[in-house]
Image 1 (cartoon, protein in one colour):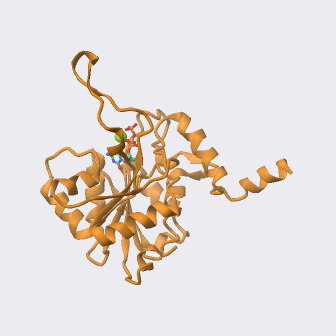
Image 2: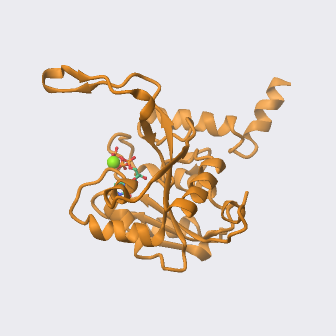
Length: 250
Ligand code: CTP
Ligand code: MG
């Protein structure tokens, strides 16, 4: 359970949650992190996955201006309140992560960046990523591509069929030694990046892949809400729900 202590070396981490997107593909009346599943916001579900880890010393949530106050209120009276900082995010996801990073300090050995809209992240993905980043500097969960990949060129003509076995889909949490992530941000200010790990790759530093979970989905489209609730129920992540299902079966 206690990833950072497993090898006898204590370490601390700060959790950065980018939650400042507008949820265009979802098309809901509020941004995705604030939609509810079984009476709780997706953001609360997501944060709660990290609470069993005693190395967690700070949670920084970056959200859009109108939702900053709402987010602070959401965690009032919860065990997160004392270690929570809420900041206003930026235009791009990386801007939101960068602004949140400024609220962490050198007292945090590792930084875990995790999408607000991945409430199904598993304990193993978190602990493996933390442990691997502690050892090697940077790590993230990845999953194999189930379909064949095609590199498509002009006019929709396939140029190449790359070796699928060497590709991984990048999930979160992406975990880094703090000094490494700070350096990566400094070096790539004007570059456009699609995830945090790629900035570290651009420094020429190793980024390790750990085994990701197929169920660690990023809630993106409306149908994902139904899927996420179903998966949470199956995984016993909705208190009370499983018991109800069981009673009906029996
Ligand atoms: N995010 C962020 N700041 C941004 C853009 C995105 O913090 N400027 C966050 C989102 O809130 C989400 C995560 O990054 O938790 C992953 O982004 P994505 O799934 O693309 O969410 P949205 O950008 O909100 O959705 P869409 O692309 O459909 O608009
Ligand atoms: Mg987006």
